[in-house]
Amino acid sequence: MDTNILLENGTNELEVLEFTLAGNHYGINVAKIREILTYQPVTPIPNAHPCVEGIFMPRDTMISVINLRGCLGLADNDKDGLFIITNFNKLNIAFHVDEVCGIHRLSWADIITPDATINIEENGVSTGVIKLEDRLIVILDFEKIVTDISPETGLQVSDIEGLEGRSRSDEPIIVAEDSPLLSKLITDCLKKAGYTKLIINNNGQEAWDKLSEFRKEGNLDEKVHMIITDIEMPLMDGHRLTKLVKEDEELKHIPVIIFSSLVNEEMRRKGEMLGADAQLTKPEIGKLVGAIDRLLDERKEKLQQKLLANQ
Image (cartoon, rainbow, N blue to C red; front, side, top):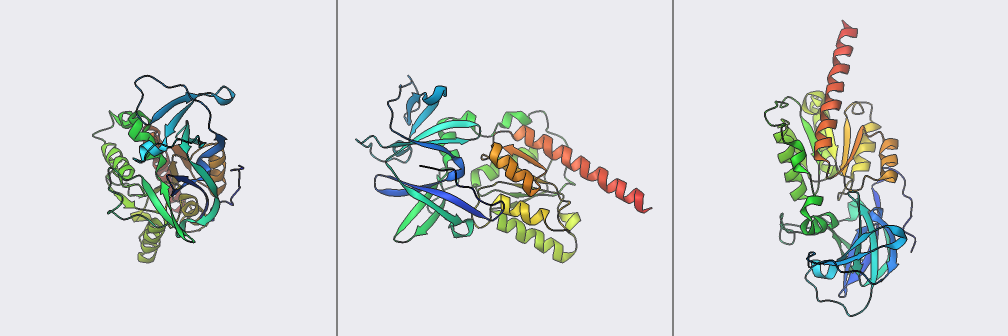
């Protein structure tokens, strides 16, 4: 199946691959997918996590296979099924599924955010729900699934050790991140690095509304010195948010950092075309702090030069 469908930059659209497990319908963002393969025998790994079926090597690349039924607490399937080969957070992983139903082009505004009754902060593995004709498609949080199996693939919190005690509280930063768990981890890490004036938003739309509110109040430059955004978010994604900011004469000077598991070569090109000032993949929290430091220092320098020129 061709998963190489190109989307225009910043349109707030995505492609979702629909697949089934035990008769239930689930979805994954096509941007995460490298290819789809028919089932192949795998080599089990001793003492591996119960949800890791083993490894296989198509075209000389070693790939771990995750039993998605096992991750979701569903009974094993006696049929072979398919492998969805993914690439995110610089990892190549195959997810074993039953069947693939097709690809749907959607707006992020069409994705319903699951409430706390079905998505508890620490345990939820759903990032959204799509109502399509007569069925509901649950978008799974594949990063959370992988991090639960292998915690070292998550945010590299140790990278910011040694930064405690710095004071950067005069730098207000807007953060747009829909995962409650990741939002908390990012917040904790940035506060340890001295950035305590954080304005947290659950998606790009909330962040855009906040920017619009500050602009209306006339204190935009006082209230926002930087924007950090994920890409995948309901209502408005990070690419759309970046496009809106960088095409606006009053906002485009605000540095935008894209911090997402989806930052690969293709996504990096898209982010550059939209005007993102930096792009980093999710585990690299230390590099994120370094990019924040650099861009805010550059911002200060530009402001000082502007003041001197106006004197």
